[in-house]
Image 1: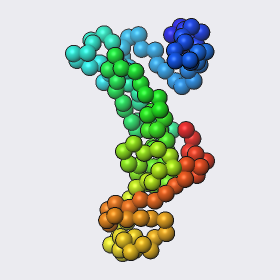
Image 2: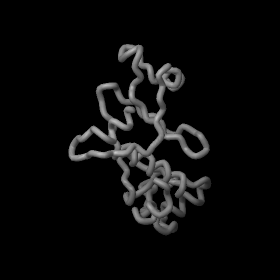
Image 3: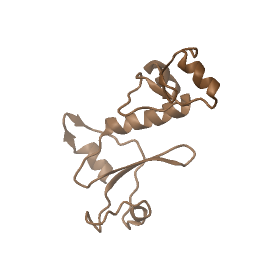
Image 4: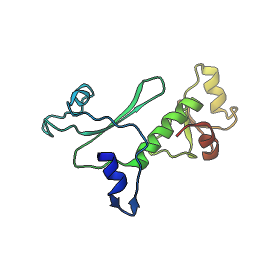
Length: 150
């Protein structure tokens, strides 16, 4: 009924007829909320805080973001997090704070001192290093979008 109400009745900031296409859990007994740590003492004993769990295809919880009952979620940030996780997995890189697709990514340090030296001397194509442990490279937004499943 809640999802139907959103789609049929809610109009906000010019949005209307919104169909929620991602899975939601109805948790009347609060069992799931208790198992996932969504009952925060001092906030409410009978209401779960709002939470987003990003679970990968292998069933591994990759990200948990909690929101107080009074605070709405940031959909743009949630999509950014999913794209960052997928980019890190697909390209074996890390993403810096506030990263957006198309911005430089962080290349993990090499496993050998020889690899670090080559990177520091600019011998690894497309990699720019500030120090042996902090190197970046560019991956275009188009390449990222073509290889991830956001």
